[in-house]
Image (tube, rainbow, N blue to C red; front, side, top):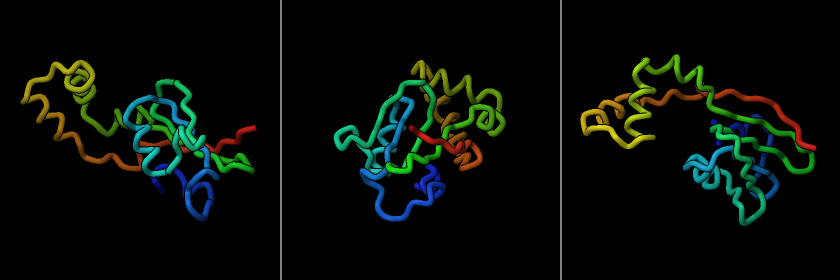
Length: 125
């Protein structure tokens, strides 16, 4: 949760309907947001706004103060070797990778960590 920016909201207590989560992609990233925050479509605390970006905005209801966290593509590019993007596209997006290419991609699975995120303070009205 800390990596997702909850600590930046200065919010104590359980994360439930008092927090609104806005996700900008319909990938498995959204599943992780639901699991870690408890924000779901069913409890009206998860909003899907399709921008195609791997981004999350967490907002405190009432004050409407929040933080937007997104994966910064430039930071990721600087972390991984040049052929990693091409390999990722072939293996994951196109599903055309060989077994050897799959294993090669797994070697890049090192966690880039918080350095690949960008945080922006946000307010909703």
